[in-house]
Length: 75
Image (cartoon, rainbow, N blue to C red; front, side):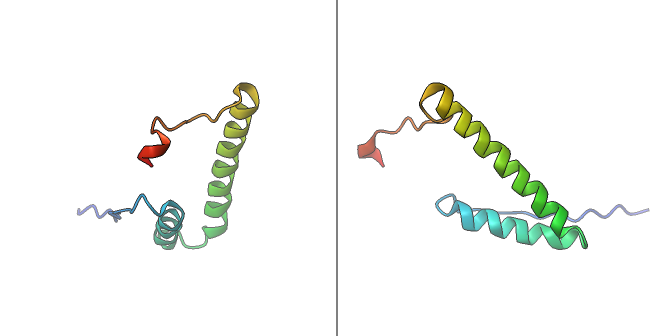
């Protein structure tokens, strides 16, 4: 018997992360009818967890978790 698996191949523009992340979510949600609310709540929780980790790191160490190695003149 044939096994059919839908796959989504995604090419992203890293210079527009918010728009690209939103586009990916909107592309994937139709594969899960009736679960849009649960998906968005799960994504929201993951985002909030990450924000809390960043805030804790700044509070504990005075600088972000991930800091760019690039010099201001390179940006």
